[in-house]
Amino acid sequence: MNSSKSDLPSRLLLNLEPWRNAAHWRIAFSGGLDSTVLLHLLAHLVKTESLPPLCAVHIHHGLQAAADAWPQHCQSICDALGVPLLIERVKVQPGASLERAARDARYAVFSSLTQANDVLLTGQHRDDQAETLLFRLLRGAGVRGLSGMPAQRPVGQGTLIRPLLDISRAGLEEYAQAHQLRWIEDPSNQDRQFSRNYLRHQVMPLLSARWPQAQASMSRSAAHLREAQGLLDELAQIDLAQAATAHDYAWLGLPSLELAPLAALSTARQRNAISHWLEPFTQLPDTDHWSGWTDLCKAAPDASPVWRLAEGELHRSAGRVWWLSGNWLRAPVIGADWQVPSSALRLADNGRVMFSGQAPCGPLRIAYRQGGEVMHLADRGHRDLKRLLNERAVPGFVRGRLPLLFRGDKLLAVANLPGLDGNGQDGWQLHWQPTDEDQGLS
Image (cartoon, rainbow, N blue to C red; front, side, top):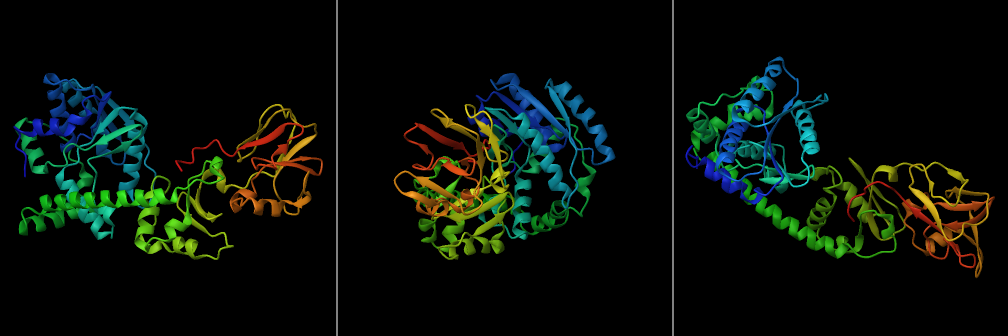
């Protein structure tokens, strides 16, 4: 239903009720109709309601000559309303989609500005939601994509809120005209070469002429699909809990799952669980490009398959799947002399090593496995390092980066592996902290 100008403030307040104790409310202010109405509503509500401090943020992309006048327009509006304005200029990276590049640049700024307990408010409305649903439907999106824009989501260290998603554009226009608001009409919004503009100007009017409630119905469908996605997320959490088992290599700090419980699920449930698990780490492939997961699951038991994704790799080893990114994908430099063993030694692209107890006499060096190494164990004599690593089921991707401590050509210790990591009689152990990077939650 359209909201009349009289009940729009109360609808907005109701939608923002859970965030009235936030530290700040920052309004993404483009100067267009939606954000102008949102800013005007809040600037007047703050006079009679106890609300967090308001601040507007205008992002200047510099993509067209007309945009150079927009910061001054936004400044004059904010000055008249008594709302502080922050103007941020960004450089949009060229690429296949100018719309996406501009959006990425915009949200990078929003993320950096939104601190803990801050709220970022944006002006998308019900018609935008309907366009999003139709646009994603035509691109073959799944349930998550077709659930449209969420009313809230994390951004930076705070939360992004879309409080106008249940308000029609017509309702916003009615409010703007009643209050004689001035807003910017972006010329690019008329350019039909952009898919969203084509849908807005060519397709939506035809649909609405035949079905007057089309946009409201599509927005309602998006809400149903959001509910369905919520159920899929709950199912994923149940399935992932079965695979989040304890293991001997938790100290690696890597996200990992036991493969057997996942492999026992149907194909659809596997994909649902793994998508949910990987979503914080990487962009996921579309439905047609999941063969990497199938290959990883079905590879021979002694194989070490890898599924390469946009921001990292999924490895199978030691009965688990492991998410690797960052330094884990870079081969460590061969090694380094340890000149001051009383202090930790930083290793290029491989964290650092240190001793507990009194360090053994030198000269000492750290190196990595090349093959053929032999280690002397007090109770077992000389043993091949490869066999010792097999006995401990060391994941394959770790073996080439485990720090090995040598004195001359003699292998003294293998970091972090019980029984191989030091000398019990002399009371020292070699400890490895694999990375200083944040690998995400396992």
